[in-house]
View 1 (cartoon, rainbow, N blue to C red):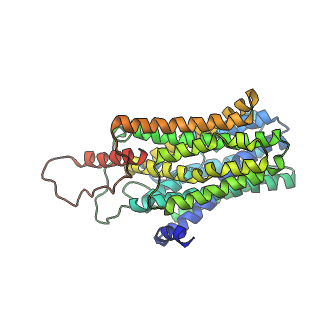
View 2: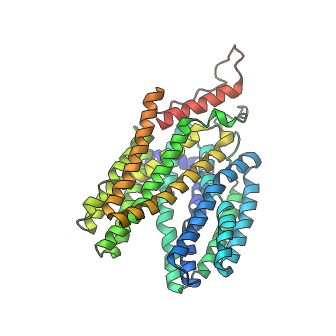
View 3: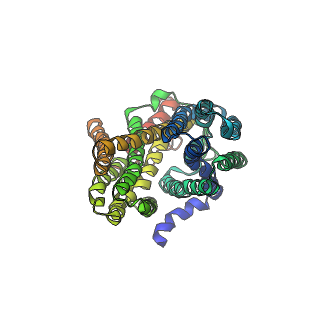
Length: 436
C-alpha cells in the first residue's frame, strides 16, 4: 500500500495542489447531482413522464457539450475569472428560477443557462492540474484527479436521491445545488489556480509560450484522443444502463448498488495502480482492455447478481486509468495557450459519448437482451482502440511513452528556425507519443 501511495506524495507536496484537489472534489459534487435532480423534479414536482424527464436531462447534456469548447476558448483568451463571473451568474439565475418554470420554458433555460453557460468545473480543474504540475508528474496528478471524480460520482447522485426521496420533492435539492454551485465558483475565484498561457512552466525565467494556431495541434492524433474519451464514456454509460437492465430481468435490482460499488471500487484501485506503476499502459491499450473486459460481462452476469459483480471487476479496474490517460494525452497534445479549448473539446467528446452510450445500450436491450448491450458498447471501445493502433502503424509513430520535451533554451540554435514552430512541433510530437 505504501508503494501505491508514495508516487502521489510529491504531487500533494507541491504548493497549492492540496487546495486544488479539495476544491476539485467539492466543486464537482453539485455538478454530478444536476441531471438526477432535474429528472426527479420533472417527474415528482411537475408530474411529467420519464420521457419528458429524460428529454430535460438530454437538453442539459447537449448544452454542456456545446458550451465546453466555447468556454474553454474564452478561458484561453480572457482568463478564468471572467468565465467564472459569467457562468456563475447564469447558473445562479437558472437554479433560482428552475423550480417555478413551466416545462417548455424549463427546457430552453436548461439548455442555455444550465448547459451552455454551466460552470466548466471539469475542464478548469484539468487545466489547472496540467498547468500546476510538471509534465513528469502529470500521470500521477491526472490519476489522482480521476479517482476524485470516481468518488464524486459515488457520492453526489446518491445524496441527491436520498434528499429528494426523503422530502418527496426536488425543489429544495435544486436550491441546494444552486447554492453549492455558487460556492464552487467562489472557491475557484479565491483559489485562482494558474491555468492559462505560460502557467506552471518549470523554469521561472523562461519566456511565455507564444499562441499557436489550431493547425499546429488539431491533428489526427488529437482527434483520436477525443475518440478515446468519447469511447470510454460510451462504454461506461452503456454499462450503467446494462447493469440495471440485467438485474431487472433477474428481479434483483436491489443488488444494483452492490454491483456498481464493486465496479467503482476497482476503478479506484486501478487509478492507484496507473499513477504508481513504473510501466504504465498506453492509452489505446487501456481503451482496448476496457472494451474487451466489458464484452463478456452480461453473459457471465446472466447467472446471477454476484456473478455480475465479479464480471465487472476487470473492466472496472480500467476505468480510471483510461480516463486519466485521456486527460494526460490532451494536455500533451496542445500548447498551454490552447489547453482550455482542447480540454473543452475533450469534455464535449465525453459528453457525446455518454449521450450515445445510454440510449444505444437501451436500444440493444429492447431489441435483444442485456448481455448483448454490454457486448455492443464494449466492442465499440475495442474498435476505437484498434483504430488508434492502426493509425500508429500507418503513421510510423513510436510505441513508447513520450519522452520529456526538450528545453528550447538549453542549447543555442545557430539557425533561424522560428520559435512558434519549435513549440508547436514539441506539442504535436508529445501528442503522437502519448496517444499511440
